[in-house]
Amino acid sequence: MTNTEIPRKTIYRLSIFQRCLQRLKENKVETVSSEALAKAAGVKPTQLRKDLTHFGQFGTRGLGYNVSGLSSAIAGVLGSSRLQPVILVGVGNLGSALLRYGGFQKEGFEIVAAFDSLPVPARAKGLKTALMKATDLTRFIRRQNIKMAILTVPALHAQEVVNEMVAAGIQAILNFSPVVLEVPKNIIVNNVDLAMELENLSYFIR
Image 1 (tube, rainbow, N blue to C red):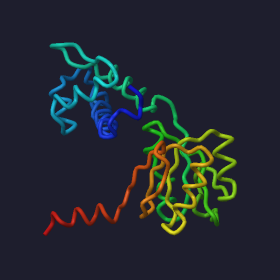
Image 2: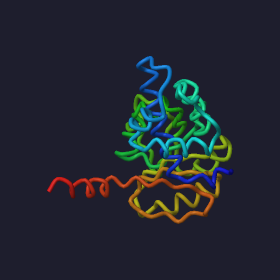
Image 3: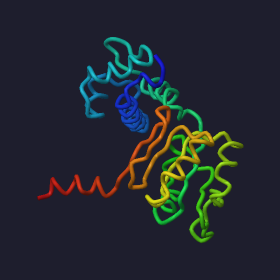
Image 4: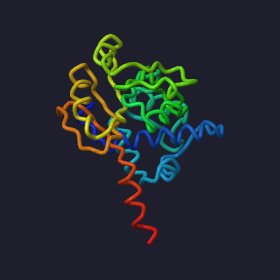
């Protein structure tokens, strides 16, 4: 089965399983049953087992899953067993905040460069991430063979920037720009619309 045939919801749930396994490792837990892991992840045991069978056979009947072994296997599937280079485009307030977030590297991702049309050095002060001009974007992606990008540019310029990144070789984009992007079928885009998420939450506090 190829990557494109695996349901995206399955990949999303793998990340949730991995977070649960990491917490178990931190608590020195060596084995976990499918029922306990599924409960921690908020899914049914049958769904957990179905998701995992896409990638092989895990666990021992009556004993459950070896926490470290399953965590390593999932990390390999997700490509987070080694540091994955990522670029960030759009160093405004949100982009600057993301550059200062320390959780990416812990999960196997490293923002290796940030790009902006008008770089403001003060926004990158104290950071190890290189702040570069937008005109260097294509050259950097090709030279460093970058496949993933975080997009935090204004909606007006988002599609233009995405077109350039895709042409240069970017295959996956985490989009914080409030716009629906048009990309080829082989390009994966995950959209994060903070205003929409707040709007959805507001329904439940009436």
